Image (cartoon, rainbow, N blue to C red; front, side, top):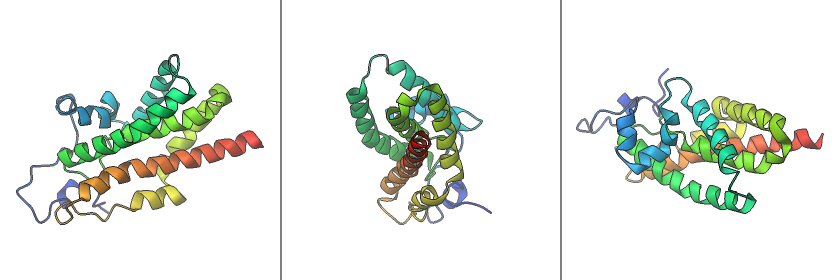
Length: 193
């Protein structure tokens, strides 16, 4: 069964003049626009194997490194600024790739996992590993509310809706934020018990 959101052949059925979709972006594509570099997680989204996991690992590593200089308030500001920047970068990159929700866009994983780590960091390494596994589960399997959030914008059609790419950028970010909320909830229950 083909998924119209991820199948490039179905994106522009009414506009055959569109350029061919970029199914697998290159480093050259990533460096051609600042939004591409951000959306592709500064290269982590170029991974041919599990780019979402690569983006989440990059988020974890960058969080540990940057936490040497950033405190709680600074992290809150970075995450808050990263959300609208991520929406913009995801929108531009998805549009330029010609795919509504490309797997290589990983900024959504980066920001969402930064949020998880910011909220669960006091749990130590065991809590971080648990949070990583839970977040990847919620993001990949998309149970319950994560699946609902992921499906919200699957019906948009760039050929007929003028704001389809805006919706796509928002949708790319939304399901990972819901996955982060589910992860934080499970970790909080684990800590409580």
